[in-house]
Image (cartoon, rainbow, N blue to C red; front, side, top):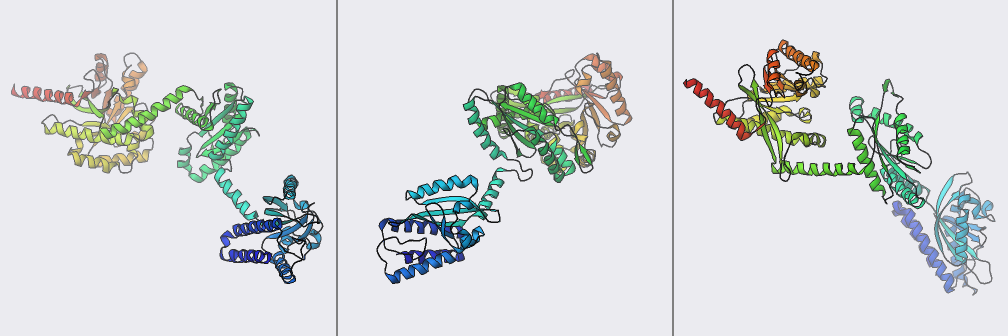
Length: 631
C-alpha cells in the first residue's frame, strides 16, 4: 500500500507542478495532507510496511515481504531526495533524525549539521511555544496542519506551511514525520494585497477601511473600560483650487507634507488615516470631554501654521475640523464617522480654519438638506417652478423698459417657497444648472408669447448661475433656446454677478460670445464683489445694476449715498446704463434721479408679478398708449 501512496504522491507533485504552475503551492499542500492522513491511517490500522531507513520505522512488528520492503525503501529514498516539499523526521523531543535534500536547501544547512539537532533551533523565539504545543498534540496521535516561520542559517525568515503526523512502532520511541511547503512568496503577496486593501498608496497611512475596523475595536474596549473616544475629520481648505492652480503632482506633494505633520499629533493609543482626497481622519482615546477634544483639534490646526515649501512656492494651508464624541449611548463606528463628517461639513460652511463638534441639530439639518435635494429633483421633473416678473422702469419717462424673471417654487405641501430658501443649496448640489436652463427657456417663451399677443416688446432679464457661466457651450445653449422660442436676441438680457468676472480672461471670452448672439448683458449686484475697475472697461456689458444693499440706506448712510453716486457717475463715463435695485420710497427715487440714474426696479413701482398679472400690466400700458394716440 505504501509504495502506491508514495508513487502517487510523487506523480501528483511532479505532474501538477509542471502542468499547473500557478497552483503548484496548493497542489503540494493538498498532496502532502492526503499523504500524511493516509500514513496516519495505516499506522492506526496496523497495515504492514517497513521503511528499512533510520527515522522511518516499520509500521508493524510483522516482517515485511522483502520485495515490497525494498521497493518502499527506494520510493522513500526518492521521496526524500527529490520531493519539492521539504521532509523531515524527528523524535518525540524534536531532534531531527532524517531530512530531505529540499530541507537542507531550505534551511541552508547540510545533513550533518541538521541530524541530531532540534528543529526548534531554527524556529524564532516568539513561535517556539506554538511548536511545543504542536508536538504535544502529535503525541496524542492527532495530525497537525499549521504555518510556522523558520530562520535560514543566513538569518532571513522563511514562512512554512507544515503537515505533521505521528509514526508509531510497538516497543519503539515515537517519531514524527513533517512535510513543509515554502509559502514565503505567497505570504509576501498576501501582505502586499493586505497593504493595498488597508493603506493609502501615496501617504502610507491607513485608509478608511482600516480606520473603521480599528475604531470598532477601540469602541468595544472603551465601552468595557467606560472611556470616551473622539473621532475627527479634517478637510484641507481650498485644496481643489490648489490642484487647479499647480497640478496634481504638487497636490500630492502637499498632502505628503500634511500627513507627516499630522502624524506628530497622535500617540500610540490614537489613530490617523487618510480617508479620501484631502480628508484625514483621527480618533483619540481617553478623552475627558469637549474641552480636551477642542484642544486636540486646535493642535492639528497649529501644525499647519508654518508655511509649506513646494520647490519655489511657499504655501499657507488651513483646515476645517469636525468632531464627534462617543456619548453614553452605544454608538458604532459608522455613526461616529458619519457625525464627524456632518460636523466638518458645517465647519466648511462657516469658513476656513473652523472647528465644529457634532450636535443633534446638525443631524436634522442634514436630513433637511437630503429632503430638500429630493424635493428639488422632483420639482424639476414635475414642473413645480414658476416665474414671477418685476418691471424695470425708466425714471425720466415712467415707461416699463424691461422686466426681471424671478423664480419661485410652488411646493405641493409648503406652497410658494422664495428663492433664498433653495437657490443656495441648488448651487451647492449642482441642481442649479437644470433649474437655470428651465428659467431661461421659460422666460424667453413667455416673452415671445406676450409679443405674439401684441403687447409691448421689452427685454426680459434672466440671471445666469455661476455654474452656467463656466459651461464651455453656454453660447450654443442660449442660441438653441432663442431658436426654439423664436425670441429675438435683443429682447433677452443675461445677468451675471460681479464675482463671476474674477477669472477675467474667461469672463471676457464668454461675454464676447454671448454678445455675438445679439443679447444684452448686465452685471448684477454691482459693488458687492471685488472686480477691478481696470478690467470693467474691457467687459462687453450694457449696464450695471446697483445692489439693493446700497440703495436701502442711501437716505440714512452717507457712505452708501456716496457709493451709489460714484457708481452712477462711473457708468456714465463708461457709456453704460445703470439701474438701481430695491427702490421702495419716493425719497430714494428722488436721490437716484438727481444723480442721473437711468432706471429703477423695486416695490416703489411694483412687486414681482405672476405671468398673468405682468401680462395685464403690459396690456394696460398698450391701452393707455392707444388712447393717447386717439387723443
